[in-house]
Length: 297
Figure 1: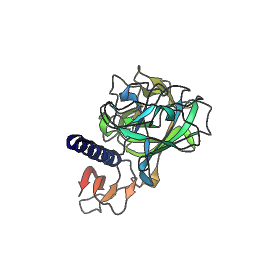
Figure 2: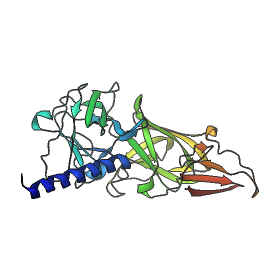
Figure 3: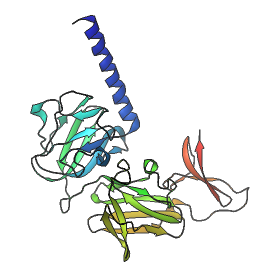
Figure 4: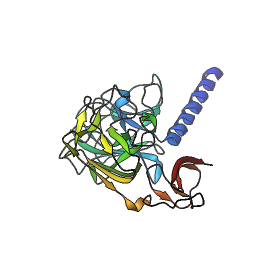
C-alpha cells in the first residue's frame, strides 16, 4: 500500500469515526425504504427514539412490509452517514437474531435489510456495538407506521417551527398510543408525523370538526384543536381507534402562582414538568404571574 493510499485510508477512517460520534451526540436515527410508510422520501423517514438509559441505542415499533428494503439514516438526507448491512449475505433479518450494521457514507455498497413477513416490529439499533435486533411486536391488530408524533401550533412555545416541535413518543407497551405532558398556551395545535418533511410534504393528525375527541389523518384539511386555557396537559393520542384526550395535569405543578415581583421563581421543562434544581438548559420560568422562556448556563 502506498503512502498516499495509506494516508487516505486513515483520513477516511478518522472522518467516519468523527461522524459516528456526531450521530451519538445529535441523538438521531431514521428508518427509510419501501418497507416503511416513508418509501424513499427522507423527509418522511421514520424517526427512532434514543433510549433513556443509553444514548447509543435507538428504538421504534413500526410496520415493515415483507421482502421490501430498509436501512437507517443519521440525518433525513442521503449525503450523511448511513447504517446498512455489511454484505449481500446479511440483508435478510431473522426476528430475535442480532444483525451487524455498518456505518458508511457515499458510494459504498448499498446493502439494505428486509424481513420475510409483514408486521409490526420492535426495532433496536445500538450504535455503540453496531448491532441491530428486530422482534415481532406483541401488537399486530393495526399497522403502526410512526414511532412518534410532533406537536405544532401556537398553543406550543415553538409555534409553527417544525424544527423545534415537541415530540410525543410511543407507549412501549401500546405502540399505537402516543402520550406526554406539555405546557400549552391558549391557541391551536395539531400533530405532524415528521418534523423533517415540511408543511407541503407531510401528513397530519387533525381534529374531527364534529367531535374534538376524534382524530382525522391526511394531507388535506386543517381542523386544529383549540386550547382555551393555558396550563399543563396530558395528551394521549390513540391512532388505532383515532381518539385523543387533553387532560389538565396538576402533577406538573403549573396550577397556581404567587403574584408580586418577590414571589419565588419556579422552573419547568418545555414539556411542563416542574424542575426543583434546574441545571444548564432551556426552561419555562414562572415568577409573580409572569411566564418566560429562559436559558440557564
